[in-house]
Length: 175
Image (cartoon, rainbow, N blue to C red):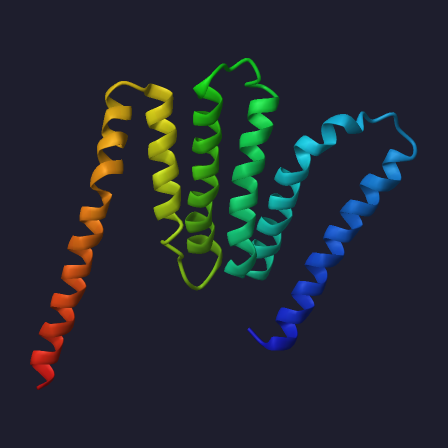
């Protein structure tokens, strides 16, 4: 895709976003919309704008913040809205699970709409999903998370040893 076409696509995206904001502001002047709840929709809408921009421009650089912001926004919206009756740790669990979905969305959308699939968001998203599930189901899941919390340094040590071994092995082949 030429540089000129990418610039035009970017201008189109930002033009649409500005028109949307203007329509909302203009409609507010003629309606009795309750703006007290608008704050709940700000992050999901902002995340959606980034996602739309990333999809239309086929740029992961917009999809990444869109997924993160959307996950946070959807989690907040669910807890304050339809799932407001949740008590205790369940609120945190639902928030963590929706936040994890936002991270997973990055991988899915970059696979579909960009030239390069970004797999790395599955790491923080997976960790958040495990924590959310552990909090939601408790019991053995929380015990498993507690165990992982104690042994994760061992995984780093094994990974470091593996990397060192691969480096030494590749040096032996070139010598």
